[in-house]
Image (cartoon, rainbow, N blue to C red; front, side, top):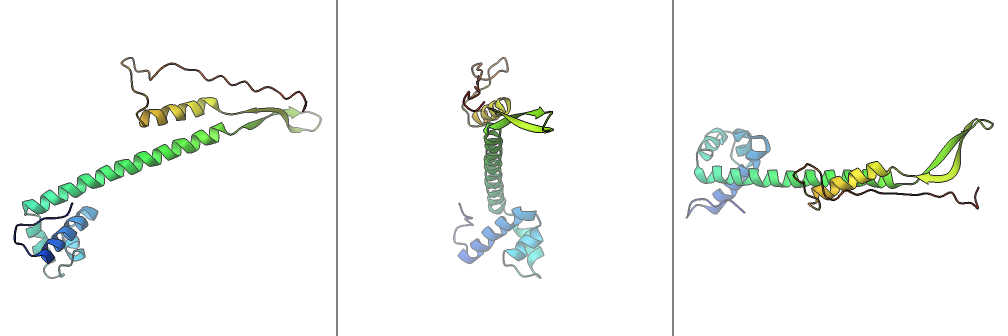
Length: 159
């Protein structure tokens, strides 16, 4: 949505007012916003004062603020989801199980692999909650109780 001034108002003036509104929410400095919107340095103070007294300008500033907040929240939600997914993928990577070999004096692989199922499940639970797939119950627990059982068997041929 774009700024709509009073009926019959100059379209160039309307564009300047829209630009003023956009620039004002950057740092909430009316003087600098007026300059960035195209008003001269000598008239920026008086124009910014007059613009902030107009109901239509203030309404447009409120619309832009709401739009900015919605966009920021969505960006933050997406960033959080990506980070949890990255943690989930890292937790799901199979890591070799090692034991200390006294003769070699180093850790050696046993042939078994493990992954961090608790972290992986917590990440999936959070992702599901954030995506609206799980809802809070009155007792504070989420969804159905479930358990992940993973059995890693040693390959007899490699032993």
